[in-house]
Image (cartoon, rainbow, N blue to C red; front, side):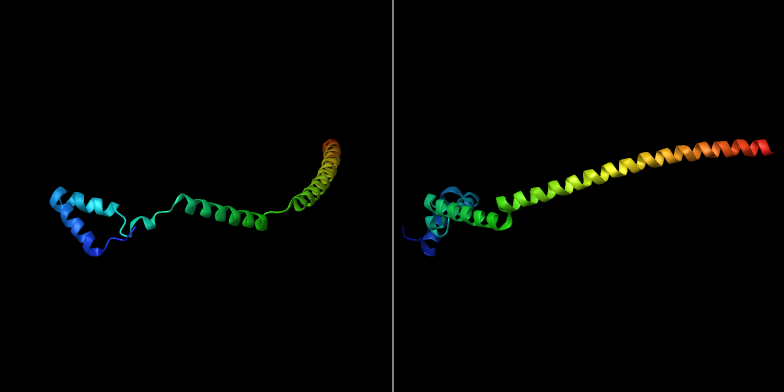
Length: 121
């Protein structure tokens, strides 16, 4: 397909203005591509672009994300850390129980000392 020269384009605009009016002619000309159909992407252009995009994304994905082995190692490390945290939590619970018992004993002693103080008065 040969390109339309600027002279041919101007003649077309003048004929359109004479036939359908200035506003509609301007609207129609905005819809017509100045360089013809060469500006439009074909199905083949889109297929090639899609394949290139998919390849680029796959390469980026491989570069950005861990391999299965990396994930396996990370999972094992995470499970180890969780087991360690569970053990620490159990130890803290045992210490909390001991502190509650000591607190109860101190309250009992405080009550006893108050009673003795009251007797001495």
